[in-house]
Length: 569
Figure (cartoon, rainbow, N blue to C red):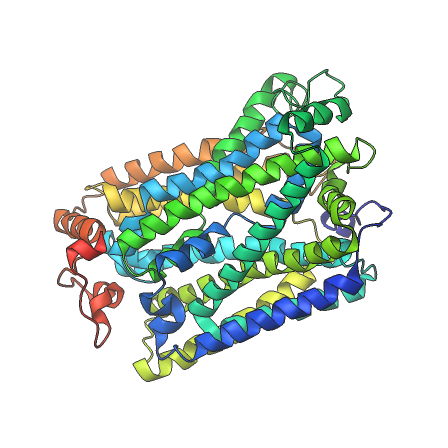
């Protein structure tokens, strides 16, 4: 059984690019800079709101940089480069889905979510549904996606230590991964949301500047001629046995692209991935819930808009780097099998800038993943504090709540690090697509219905959230991620019947279930919808129907005046 669930070690590769003698000092220097920035944020943390949502004082500039880092992870920076070098146009199309998801977030909820106020999804759901049910649904969604992202994020830390710092002893990789994880826990403990925001700002500045520099160097290698880059990329491309060109469609979307699917299903398989990324990423809680920390709804909308433009520029550079890698290194210089896709960018960096840039890549990549872990942790601690305490009927005294939150950071953080390290040997590749599918199938429909459908009620929330989770998990179990493929959890078994990404089916089914559940219940509260409209569109504080609303409103904090409608939207 352990042979089934444990991952095989990555195929050996001659690591000629790692420069730990430069990467380690740079990583320590970046860590110290982040430490002092996070420590400077500690003095502004006076109560629970200051810790969890930075007192709602995050401005447009800060949130733009922090939000722009949301889709920048190990997979969407290092691995995607190798993916583009191998699959060209189709991989670029897949990458654009991440940028489109930010537009979905901008159009649907960036401003309304902040205007409604609160700390978690539970505050939004509680306006339209029974509070206990709303908080339970919120905690379930956040904890489920948190565990999946946590395990994959810790695995990414281990891969960076293994690949970019050239640490080969598995016990040392695990130990260093735990150390980095605990440092992130300490950062969150000290600075709360403001500290995490400053950490993400440093991440944004460094990674964007570094990728921009690499892009210029790659273009300079080809006389600053994009057309030469494209021509050389096509000429040096790894041949496709079906005859598809690198710069044309087909390598991922054409027939015969998926090992475990019939040829006629291939276009649907990969288009379903694009769809799931677009709607699923927009629904991942830890990515969009930081909008609660922004000054007002208008600033939330502006910051997400600016962040979207930054991300478009970032991924345009990643596109050039992916194609530049095959143009400069040739087909023998890139990773040509899936487990080696993450060596293409390091080899390109080594070619362009030698050990100095290779060490910088290692240090910055460590910060990239550490920033994701910090955002995950502050998100789940907020849910534990605000959602689970309500479900348990526990309301800490105002003076004790901050201590309670910091205790939660330590407990949840340490347990998370231990869990992540324990799961390093396991097959975890299925967690990222599953969590994205859950974001689209369980979170997004519930948010859309809560904000925009007058008839929505408690039953509809249950059917949407738990129905979306059930349908997604059912389809995942019978997908090629679990059986019927050599990379599946059970490669020797074949009980799959789902070839496409589950989100293509589970998202519309979840919307349908929410509609059915709502209409089968007699519960209807038009006043609650009117209240939601007023709060979502203007940010004005409505007299509370219950304690949940009072807790979620900005005006509930002592000494803070309610925002005028003109300021909120």
